[in-house]
Image (tube, rainbow, N blue to C red; front, side, top):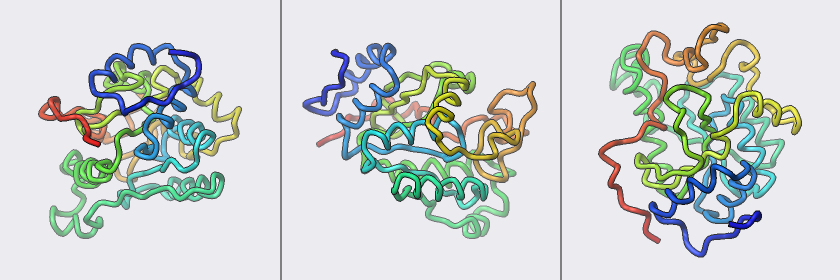
Length: 252
């Protein structure tokens, strides 16, 4: 491949994505982002929690390429006030309307159907209802999604490829900053004056829903503040469905 991204004649197949993954290891994040926009637009979406630092760098990079690429977030109804405020800040800064992915049930309706505070008893079930299934329904309209996963974030993410076939959602998954570390991300945010969630400076290393997120101390892993007390460090969005491993490729 040349040094300049070239729009693919067709969307890459699952097998071609596996080949591209090796090549993309040597590409810059900006190059990967431009390739993604040129290849998948308009069936490309950026997924951002508005909690982590990496997601904010991703949003800024994409907005510098094409502000028509939608930026979506999971509005579980349980986000921190600081997260909602950041969403408004980003909307004004880039002149965009972040897309809220809303679960079919309100928190009150979920409480009525499954009992109060499901997150305190069955956190994975709660994540499935308020995150995974709503995301699955939303992504059916797209061929690829961009996420802010990085290999240094946790042990479960150490093998994160820059681009891969997502068996859970049956589409391409692009992680342009997979090879970056925390220092590089913060360097980018500061150099480009990118807004970020203020909770990140108050002891929170990973930010999700209010009831399942706590600040951590210096000796803890970055994901230790999520679902504290449970053997769980992922909501399920980035955990493959083994049953979906043979999922078909998207049809045009």
